[in-house]
Length: 344
Ligand code: AMP
Ligand code: TRP
Image (cartoon, rainbow, N blue to C red; front, side, top):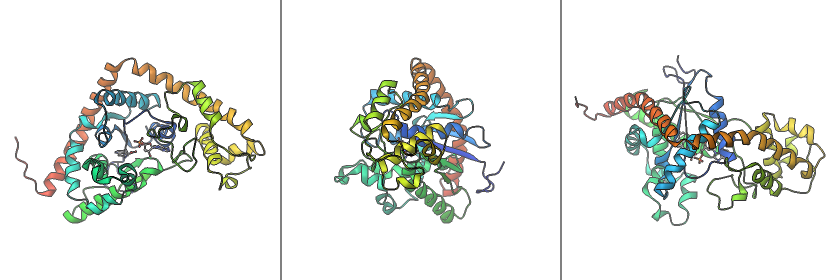
């Protein structure tokens, strides 16, 4: 089967999540839930725990290993089925790091300095950031293009990195006069592509926010979820009948969007039921739906995490399968670039 946007390429979806902390409701709604939904829809699905990305900032080795397993448990608990998808951790497939080096020679330094994620993460003292943090997007392009992936589901914050992936593919194809890499489509869809902090409607919900109250973690129990929603920052006004009425109320809009994404409804459908009511009524309803959507996931995560050997087996098996797709594409890339291949 050929991809409609990139003729000649197999429709293949790739996405990744960093194991750099506990996963949040933002990761679930913006990424994991959609990863699961994309299975069995006609494209191959390849999902990766990007541990090589995580080490661009310091990670305690013991903790990192535990978080890789926890991320794998979160993928599976969210419905990613290792029989239907390829699920693995990045460092077990060496093609990613090798392709990243090749892309380091294609991408331009200026492209890297322009990335807002680099600016945010490097902060004021960017001279002291790891070289890996700067080169991070070339590794991300490598993740995607080593599978010649045609589509990548992500949250809104990854849009700029995907544009850079397209730039790398286009420059490679142009410089070497080939059509080797597809121009990957970003899939940034739905109402939850940017779930905001519960404490500040202008910041994204993030596993690295110092305040635990700012986010819902996939490992939070029902009481904690309800309490965080109860304490979420809002305003005193009643809810309008349509989402347009929440333009200047970011905290309120965020909670309505979260409700809609959890309920598989549109924000307008949600507001049609809550029009005229205040957060005293809305928050308990949101807490109920959040708990009923997340509790089964948390429970399944705990079950998977009780058997780390099985998680390791699944990731190892996924890595072998990933390798069979990635290695021939990497080989071809090296050949195109003129790197001599003569190993028997
Ligand atoms: P990360 O945790 O940065 O590795 O992100 C993994 C995936 O989750 C990416 O597709 C992100 O775009 C998505 N994601 C992370 N935080 C959020 C958020 N607050 N809202 C929506 N999507 C998010
Ligand atoms: N940079 C992404 C993030 O922080 C994670 C990531 C790495 C990724 N490689 C990827 C996402 C490839 C999609 C495809 O969210």
